[in-house]
Each structure stands twice: as C-alpha cells, then as structure tokens.
Image (tube, rainbow, N blue to C red):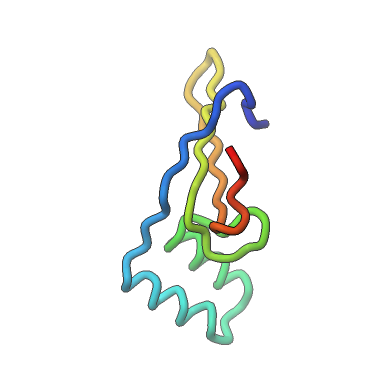
Length: 84
C-alpha cells in the first residue's frame, strides 16, 4: 500500500550501452515471455508499470512503519511518468 503522505523520490534508471544491446537482443529474439521479463528485471530493474516498455525513471516511496524500513519502487517510461 502506497504512503500518500510522502512524495516519492524520482531517480533515473541508468542502463549501460552493453546492457541495452543485450536487452534488445533478448527482446527481439524468440525466447519465452518469462525470459524476456527476467531480462528486463535484471537489466532495467523492471518494466513500465503502465505499458510494460523499457522504463526511464523509478519512483521510490517510503512505506516504512514503526517496526522498520520499507520501500515501494515503481518503474515508468517517460510517456507514463505520473505528474508528481
């Protein structure tokens, strides 16, 4: 559950040129959907929450409670980055 009291931290998702080449190779190949999702998670940290494409930003919400630290991370492409 998102803690709406706090605005999220917005961070760029940095993918190396080699990572982009590898990700494109996997996404454009005939491998399974699960393998494509796994590659997206490993290289980009996940996919866009709205459309499933390559994300450019991640929003990090503090959802910690009295017992400890907690974070919610959402990934978005430029098109679907919510107006914060």
